[in-house]
Image (cartoon, rainbow, N blue to C red; front, side, top):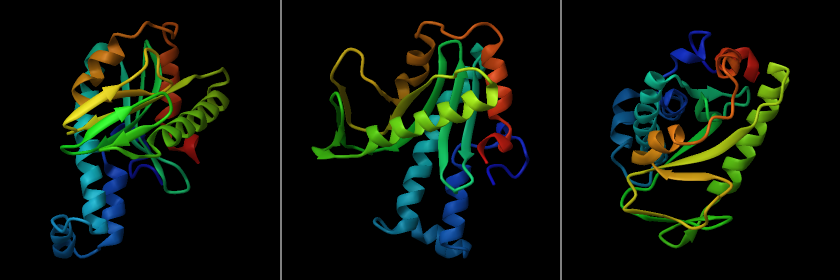
Amino acid sequence: MASLHGDLALNRPGDAVRRKIRDLQPNALMRWLGRWYRGSEVWSWANGLVGERVTGRKLDRLKRRGWFVLHAVQWASGSDIDHLVIGPAGVFTINSKRHKGKSVWYGDRAITVNGSPTRHIGISQAEARRVARVLSQACGFPVSVRPTISVVDAAKVTVKGAAPPVLVLPVKDLSRALTGLSPVLPPGQAARIYEIARDPRTWT
């Protein structure tokens, strides 16, 4: 399932999407051509892959500051968590969304892209709740998880409200925003959660 290696720490950003693209189009040449046909299913997934890779590179810089980062954490169902980040400020599920050249607006309950509503907020909240349940059970103590959305390549990102339930951030601000949050995990607890989270058996 999630990792070919048995250790999710070895996953690269977007690995689950790469597998999906290969499943959609096994032929390497057709797969490459599909990335350039806007509107095709391969193009759509390839666009998402770019977002995950950009977000992943930004998040990997957190490792130098004592944070732990996992990518492409796959559930037994085949869906995956784009990125899972664990550090002094807590545990975060990070969903990459690439909206190249578009205006992203986040109110209290919804995100619109060029004025059109999306389901980004509800999906991110449901994912964080699910991850919290699994990690709490596996760790043997309550684990809170904060849903976060990394917006990649948007022309403009506007966030209304002082304390939104989902963190919505341009990818360039991601690392600075997370490290700027107040610590909530006792020393050693982040490492304990990470050791459990990196085990593929946790997510089966």
